[in-house]
Length: 520
Image (cartoon, rainbow, N blue to C red; front, side):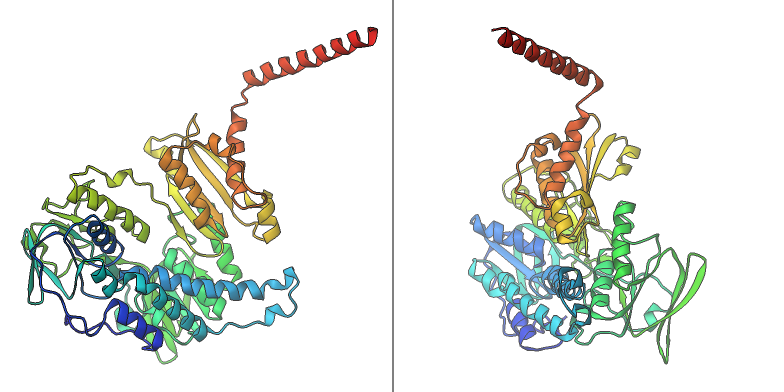
């Protein structure tokens, strides 16, 4: 990429023009390097931006380098645009299903995909001001737009500028990478990097991969009116999550009209006059599915190309990314890495907290470990599916657990909202109330999981959660009810016998007292 040529945004309407002016201004002039930097961040996604802003706020001399657009995947082609589309599609579905709430004619409501996408672009441009190149320059950070290449263990080059550093953090992230599917390279297809440029709704949409992106987009496009076909190699959807949790999401997708072909075998793609053919075997039957657009939502590759990591003495793997230790140090102790480039937790919030570790360990001789982080995640379907910590399979890894589940159909707020599908499930270390994992399937699971993440981080037991008073009625009551379930397990047979003896004695004492009073 020409360092002075901004990436193309489509469509180039007023909203994308405003986005581009913030995150990749066409008239940007790279500054002259300002001596040796305390920290250089390569990549201006979440990890790079947090590293740079945090270090600069502490008085460090900082530079940040971005070859694409400031804000990285999250702002431009990930979390922000996807949630913008999901929210628009969710409102459309809520209105269409409004007859149960007294809305007349709601089922005839249609959604305008073009307007939904324009809304997303407008909101994305609004949010982009936080990640703007000018804002980071105003924070005292030298912002360089262009390709960064290490030329030695403590220096790198951006265009005709050479930067020297005491410490650096590689935060270049990852990109969509298509799997080796026969015929895929012969047809045009969408990824998360291009799907948000659409302005017209595909009449027939094929999606490969029923992970978080695939499920979110399948449901959203179906709600807008696309005929969506979802192909997954494994069973069901969200195959990494607890099976009954994934099944609830699958049923929701089915109600929205998504056609799932799971346990898919021998998938191949062909381009013909009538469209793109997805030919696959699912559960013993062969399908020839014709679509107008194809979205590939599986496969990620770390952005290690062109960085000159060999010159810097940084070990890496072309598939797994940069190699780091538990303190996020690379094989070159001057250089750290954070975010998708080095972690299996490819989430914006994970990159954020990894960057905080980098600041402490790189600049202040800290000894913080990434393994100490408690990282939750959420798939933003309707209902949402959120998880933190261990799964039930932990028992196979030598961790014995007890599990408590509260169904939403027994939670008053969920009943009143008409959102009774789902549950709160908490795993505790066997014989204690120490929370080691949780799964929530609910309308606001992403918000609810925060309570359990906090409990795990601060070592608050499930029993203590049960004693917390919550407003009534709320969805959070489901978590408290799980705590009640745990507390009831402490009523052992021995304790129950003691209670019975005490209550019997108490009843007898009251009768004796009444007899004395009557004789008086």
